[in-house]
Image 1 (tube, protein in one colour):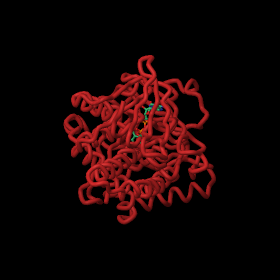
Image 2: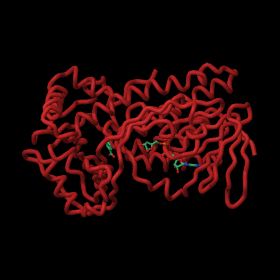
Image 3: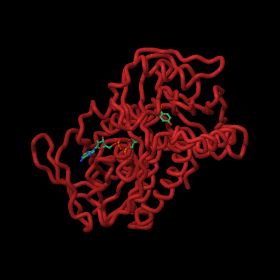
Length: 389
Ligand code: APR
Ligand code: PHB
């Protein structure tokens, strides 16, 4: 079998790349290890920045997003029992964010792929890449019990943090930069109308808490916990009690409802560079991870494939390699801007050492970003996403 672009992984990065290439008349095959149900149900991020929404619209996959997505023009930072609004849209010339689950984006992209009759294979196993330094890279895998080989012009490694494409770059070629945090996030989905219109990020001496949402009837909430904490230590009553405490504010109350999903995820920052080896290009979580406090993981993945699709389109049109040669540097510039913002949000809002000096600094920063317009504008322009070039 032959294709132009072999895409490994059907997360947001792989599926969006396939869609962007399809719109340009470039063929691809998407290979996914999991089954369709799994990728469509997996609860992940839920905030789309302005650039991501613009691109989903341009790619013709925003019909349901435009109907069901909830646009937000501000966020709230809460500390010392009081809320402070960051008026994101007013501070950024009208840019905004949309609340729309990552798995909804994935469902829409799979539907578009199938409507186009383009190849997307679930439950493939033993995926491996070969000859990425030559002009005829290949992917070998097993599909429905049969061994397959796919010859490609280029391979896109969109297989997430635990995939096989980053190791295939060759350990000695990669420069890894990373940070582990001494805490994780316990996230719940609750079947109850959100107690807030806008997202609330709360700093509290007991730890960070946040109130997000997925729909007018579904709330998403998070608590900072120890990274190696077991979910068994967190029965529903304990989760609600802790959320009430950390989110408490005068004249506000939190509505409880049945918890329909709960999990603890560790937090890390990670960057692998370069993002290209020969004819193999990494995109999304395969190359970088950000802590969730800035709500940027999905948006960075979408930005990578925007840059890659543009570069491949130019290459197929007239043989120009300028975009492909710049791919890694172009993506990494944004990756590092977002790493800085995500680190800023994480250290601003989490309880670290508990040390009096750290606590003093955090409160000073919180007061500053909620009282100085230039400081608030800086937070806002990063949160809605800096414009793409
Ligand atoms: N072969 C085929 N598919 C694979 C393999 C493999 N060897 N290894 C992993 N995969 C698949 C995974 O099952 C997953 O569906 O690759 C996909 C990678 O998708 P994501 O992990 O969602 O990564 P990405 O598309 O880069 O999206 C980044 O995900 O983690 C969140 O916050 C992050 O929102 C961001 C987004
Ligand atoms: C979410 O709704 O899942 C969410 C929102 C904002 C974040 C992180 C996660 O910063």
